[in-house]
Image (cartoon, rainbow, N blue to C red; front, side, top):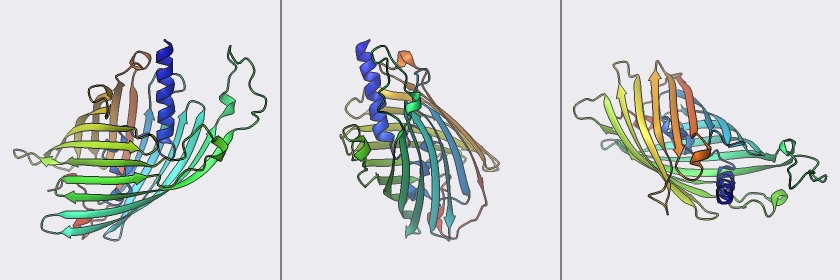
Length: 325
C-alpha cells in the first residue's frame, strides 16, 4: 500500500510540473482542434473556430486534477491567423489560471504539390497559487503551521514557438514550449525552473479509394521535458466520414506510453466526435493502466464548439487538412 501511495504522489507531482504554464495534454488536440498543441494551426480553416474543453483526470481519486479551457482561432488576411486560449486548472491544493495569445503565418512552398509551411508564436501568462484554505489537520500534523497566513501565489510569462509542414494529407508539427526559465523565488526547492518541453505531432489523412467521403487518420504525438528528460508518446487512429452537407462524424482510439516502457501503456481509450451544421461535440475516455487503475475510473474529456463567420481564402495554405481533396 505504501508503494501505491508513493506512486500516486509521484504521478501527481510530475503532472503538476508538466502542466504548469500549460494544461496537461491528453486527447484534447484529437477533437479536431490541433491549435491545442501548436500556435502554427491558428487561422487554418475557413471559419472562426471556437472550442471549449472540460477534462477530469482519475475520477475517484480525491483532489485529482480537473481543468477547463476555451480555445478560439481565425484567419486574418489570406496568409495569417491569430488565436487565443484561456484555462483554469485545479490539482490538489494548487490552482492556476492562464491565457495564451498566438500568431501564425502560412506560406505556400509549392502550389502544384500542395506543400505549405507555417510558423507560429504564443505569448503565455500564468497565475499559479497554493490554496491554503484547503489545508486540513491530519493525525501526524494536528495543527496547521501558523506561519502560513496567506495563499502562496506567483505569476509567470513565457513563449511558445513552432513550425508546421504540410504536404497533401501529411502534416508534421515541431514545437518548443515555455522557452524561458520560470521565476521560482517563492517556491525555491519545490519546483523546477526549467519548464521547456518539446513536442512533435505528425500524421496523415488518407482518403478512401472506394469512398471519397471516408478518411483514415493515423497520428503520433511525442513530448519531451527538458528538466528531467521525461518523454511520452501517443499513438492515435481516427476514422472520419462525411455526408453530403459536409457534416461528419469520427471514431478513434489513443494509446499513450512512456518511451522507456513501450509495453506498459499509461493510458488507452476510445474517442468519438461529430460535426453537425457547424456545431461540434467530442468525447474521449482514457483508462489508466498502472497501479492507479484500481483507485480511479479513468479520465474523461468533453469538447463542444462552433464554427462560424465563414470567409473563404484565396490562398490554399490556409485550407484545413481535414477533407484535403
